[in-house]
Length: 612
Image 1 (cartoon, rainbow, N blue to C red):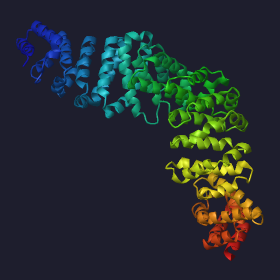
Image 2: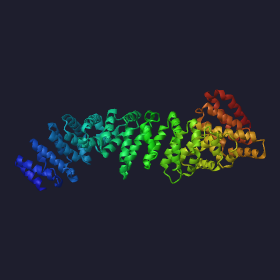
Image 3: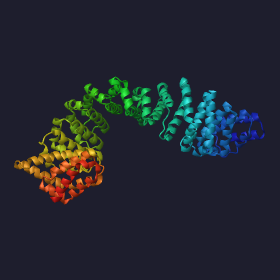
Image 4: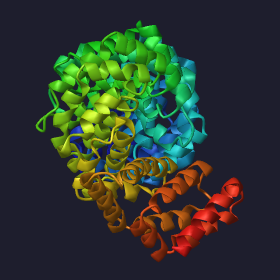
């Protein structure tokens, strides 16, 4: 047993208060070097009544508890009960040392947390309330430090703290300490770290606007990067809520984050600081995913945040560049914004940027972000022509060789949307055999369902928008190209079903008109018949009717019937439909009330197929 503890024991036995105080002061000064093997040296202290001795006793325990091994010994109900009992005196110095002792015992010590439990937590909350009322900065700091160590890693106690309305208390303390933040920085750090833990247990509930407002104010005045990061982590976790997004946008969070990033970006030199910068950037993007915040911060093209994000399009920092692009993509979710942005050359800037990043070796995150923004900008009919004129197809085309599904998905979607109503661009693309071959490859070989769907949809849209039969021989010459369209028929999505019918109808119309023409055209017609049979179009039609019969929209059934009308013109296809009982399946649609107006046509086609 350490000699200091022996001397303390002797002084307690002699009831010599002066020696007890002297020995406790020595233990406080050398606490880190003392090895406690049992509670027996300090147990007599629990019976002391002298205020000065009690303060020193708690102080000594706090110092001894800084050692891992000593903490294990001090993890005892008798110790924690003694220390918690000292709070009843409402003596500030005594309460401070008791909080220090309990906080140190709880440090990385789940057993101690369990001993203190919910009753101890309630007591601690009352201590923090007392500290707030007494306006004692040191008491507030150590009490909040104790709270942090007590709650750390203990889900039950964290949930209990929320039930005990700890958030309002935290908010009030933080609000008060804004007036002299630097002096209360440690206390605020304890509270913010605790708050960050507690938000993990807030299911479908969010921090109050008052508390969010305090976090923004701390970000404004704190000169400590670590505190800023904690605030940003808490705010980041609140941005699933649209009301919070709008409130924070109005409080200037995006402008503030931009300033912080610009201030600290040159100090980013390790994984931790890079992760913090990414999170900060993510906050701006998340706020802009809300429609109202996005509109507010765009401000008719004059918004500070909008202009800040445009400036990041020229950044050499990858994360700032990506954030700028993603932000512009979010601003482009509004028709008015899109029109104005294209007129102001933003689409051209994005295309110029993409031209520097449109090859296999470039970063896919940047590629994906630019494609997302361009996709939004080309939705409006009045934007398509200008963006095509600015080189969209030329710049996007090399990206067909990028083997990454997320990039391919956005690439195909952008091309599909931009050619809507643009017959010249559609014809240019559909005449490119290598593109059609790529579409077939993606349609049947991609593991990404979105890519498979977009590949077949782009083919259907190209056929619809090219307004020419010139590419049809190329389509028929490419193995499984028509099959891509047939595979769309049993899709889960009505829009894809209708797109398939429309494209197939166009191909069949051309077949009918050319069936009695020259040898080449007649051969193409026969090829289409054969291709449709090999693609098992009958089975796809039967599957569609059986699975979606009552869910089909009248428009889809009309398109289906139109296609069947064109298929049965061919003896080969008529026989194929009959052999696969399409007439019988078609007749099932008669039982569906919403197709009443189509009953006669359904019966006629059904009988025609059955009679062969």
